[in-house]
Image (cartoon, rainbow, N blue to C red):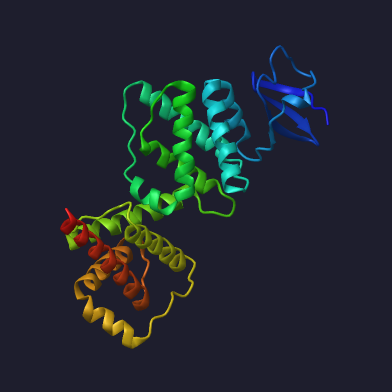
Length: 284
């Protein structure tokens, strides 16, 4: 199908009208030496999508941001869709593009990029974080700018929240922040070194994430029989008390209530994590 240019946003992006809708059409040099009503060569088209909401904001971004920033964002989005084997929400074209351009500019001005949720993001969103690392590698290759791993975490969160049927950015940030706060309580209570790359830590963070999802969606937690519950409480008293403090914080700050069984399973994860930390200290 042949598309005629309705509006040129930059050399690589134009707006067309198709079936009464404005569509964004992207491709390298797609608008070079072109004007309104000219036909676009099909061989140059790489992406076509409809921005149902916030179309004007996206078009303004495309007109004002550096073209190389837009191209990098789009390459990361395409790579992510290939790695995840699923389309991402069209809103990532606004969110990630705007974020990346701002991050690049801040770094060039001498500001530091920090992400205090990095450890939790690495544990919760492994695939997305790997894509984020690929993304900062692309930025270095294309622009010669070396970004910290913290930025890979920011990219990962944008990608995660753009997956279809997933939570909003605000909800993902809240969930990740809550898990980080619970981990801080754990560190304070246990006073052990935690290997954030270790399997015990990864399993605990993953369990906390799904526990929070179950509570928010009012799904039943996995049950543990009463005898086993009592055994966990008595055998791992310190770890159970730590789990209770984490649960009290969650209820106080977020009005979410862990079941007794959930507390027991969290206790077991804490015990494994503490044991791994003690082994690490002995090994040193």
